[in-house]
Image (cartoon, rainbow, N blue to C red):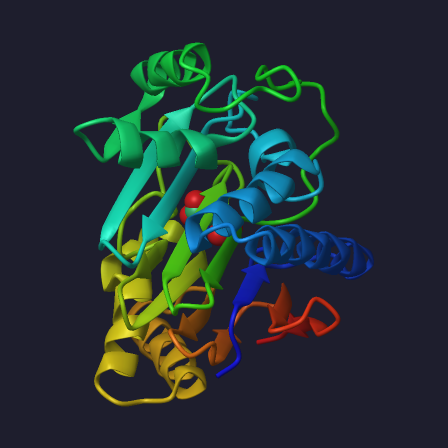
Length: 287
Ligand code: ASP
């Protein structure tokens, strides 16, 4: 077994060649941040949240501070966190004015009777979360709308702790030129991410089509049916492409720390750490 482990993606898409090393660098740092939490005896959820916060806050990926604006120039963020151990999740959609929607998603999962909040009312839950001291704002939660234009893609990760508990995330500003109020796959359980006590997955790409085939759940199902994780990732992507003709990417990891990945997009920057922080693998998955 190769535990604990973390696998991170920085989004599948038409990355400009010169931006790919930047994406790889930041997913690598995010993997280190998450793995460090695991070494300090954090849970899979703690590590997945910390890793995703890094990517939301770095300003170089399409999530949080660096998110791609909608057609009206507003950053509307979607995010989800999935707890495979308890088959549970929390999600937020179209939330504005905050930097780390993944933490809000976790708060919703752990501290409310609900799973999924959208829009202005999600922002009210965020304010409650801060007031209660569930999370501290390290920087102002107000996103700088003048921040540099987005350069990366959606982010996500899967963490498997030393006991085989799995957590997964996804966080995004959405696809280019999205209409105000549009929500993609990223906060939708089973589509943008999924995890149970066997396997986890996190997807990226055109959310409209990822939702049609419930991509992350399908990848995990293939593992439950007996495929190894790499074959499951490839089978999920083949199925996705055949049924939708669209572009996406996926990462998959099982409870033993085996992992797989696949994309039919130009590039998907990835990072993996297993067992030991010295074993950081950086990779660009290509379609
Ligand atoms: N899946 C995201 C969405 O549709 C976008 C992406 O992965 O780049 O919102």
